[in-house]
Length: 109
Length: 116
Image (tube, rainbow over all chains, first blue to last red; front, side, top):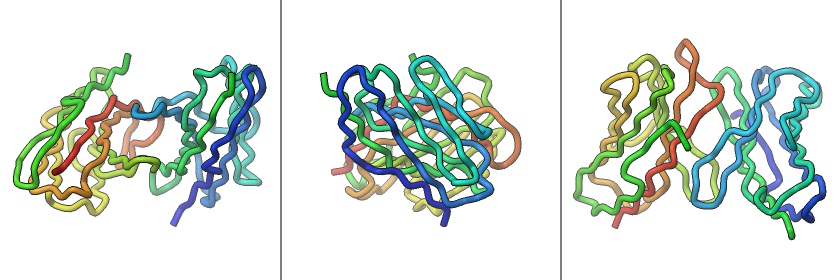
């Protein structure tokens, strides 16, 4: 059973600070990694994808991948109240895409 | 605005009803998916269509019946559902080739189903 683990939270971060979300995965042959944001009652929205070790930046978002340690993280700089949502980590392996249970992030104004 | 459109947005049905959920995408993607999501849980894969052929059925009960009339359309036919089937049903699409067309998924807004 391929596993993707996330701390369910809630993770509470003051507005303007950096929010750090972490994800670990069990399948060593995993190839692609994704972060989805899901607002309450809405559908998931892809915000970042990362395929190789290191950092990938897109605006206020930075995804970090370390395949040796089997973790992927998402940093959100200058956090805004509109960033409050559940963040789902998804890992693509040989069996397809596996979602973590998500981390509930709350940005405090 | 999402490029994957789902209808209806909300559906209430009795256990003896027959209804359908519909999904349409105009991004030229060749893979389409149905996911089921319960509250505070991650999306759970139900079916995958690759080039209009069913490639993955994740042991879904036969009361759910998928159909892919063409590369842009995906339906989910519902019959004799149970109250525990109440959930958000998400359609998604992605580019790619091969039986496991996973990658960057584009989700529709979902159809919230309530079974009485």
